[in-house]
Length: 399
Image 1 (cartoon, rainbow, N blue to C red):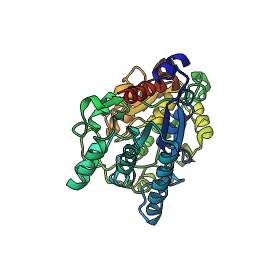
Image 2 (image 1 turned 120 degrees about the horizontal axis):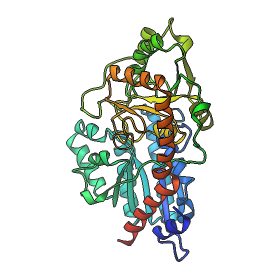
Image 3 (image 1 turned 90 degrees about the horizontal axis):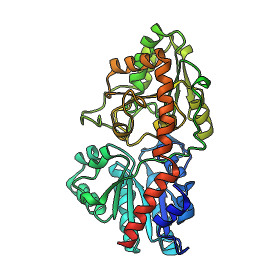
């Protein structure tokens, strides 16, 4: 995708750039939404539009996200004030905002963002970053649903990260208002690593150490893996979170998440027996995360619910095989046996078998690695996804 094509999609042929306000979290912490905003702001969209970013990061630690308290009240007034000043001073033609799947996020920020942006005459594009929005709405009150429904209908486009996630907005907005824009990746920074440079048997888990991310499922199968593969070892990177605050249901079935304590699972399956082969790396910044991905043989993320996991996309971009679950965007973008191994969430037998299959089959790992390196560059580069966004921005401004 060349700059000329992107400029044309942005309606920039005359040299006058459209003003776009980008609203979303910026690292730290280095979780999926934060990294997605960083990728967007570093993309060619910056050259095609006059961009201003409004940072919504409140918690500097992933472990603190979702905690209620007076700090969130102060954050609401701070954010609303900054938003009003930006709308009044910058007068954006487009407001593009990440929205959450939580009622607190919607009622405390997203509804106000949409309403104030429309008040100042901006066209609004919202982008859902999770896959459990529908489940959260089912437990909301009628008034809460009515308010969220009102706000969604005032957005000009409601974006999701994959075709399978269109149902997040179904019934809330017109079908034609829903569009698919996946995550983007910096293919220069997340460059492919030759398979022989990864350390055989080093398996990486990259995500919150929670039930929702499948961390407990991985702890359960690790001892069985060690019985068969003497060279296998696991590395876990991410925030250790005892209580799940956002995801409470299995995305594919709507059933409640398993009621498990990650710390107790560690004590039951790993502590005192396998600690020498299970290493906790802590919370990684971007450089350390890339180093961990470079070292690993493959990534495992057996989540119960996802939007579009940045960890999976980052691993695929670096030419790493992945073992993941058929949730969120992975249902669309990871094909079992082609560019990864896909299992059902919560299926520990299938998880065990998939990990064993990759550990035992070097040719399969290498083939998937080559496929992923090409696939990501053809579909998820910053240039390609920026073009999709630019086209949407142009369409709604011209409508």
